[in-house]
Image (cartoon, rainbow, N blue to C red; front, top):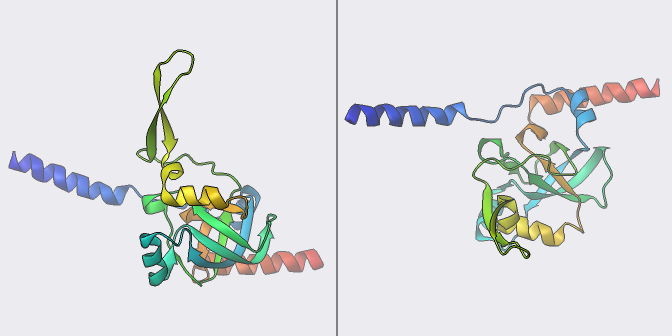
Length: 191
């Protein structure tokens, strides 16, 4: 029995490293065509400043769902120079942004990705005609404090839905490469 428990424990702990977010095929030109938004800018503060957890993240200078000041628009139209960065991944696919650092962000206008299993909140609805109870699973984000807060301000800000594979710090090799590609594209267009 002890041997079985040891084997199961090692197996389960080992699986932690197996499941992770992998960003394959990082091709700037393909990504430029695929994504609705491509911007450069800086995260300024976490969303929902009334939350204790968010205040702690602000004090640490990092966050995942943040207000983002746009410095350059490569693709997309925006209501104003500040947007909401809302990440659709959880766990290993959630990118932690450093507040104040410069980022290249690829994002979508809509949340195309369903939340992963376990991120659904069951809601019981009663059919008005039959009186039967029906369980409906709403995305976890719709019941979260941040999700609720975003619902109240979404008319004032554009929301950029993204994930770890769409966030690139100015410190990354991919960010530096895209700067070169963008400069080359600008030079080709002016020739």
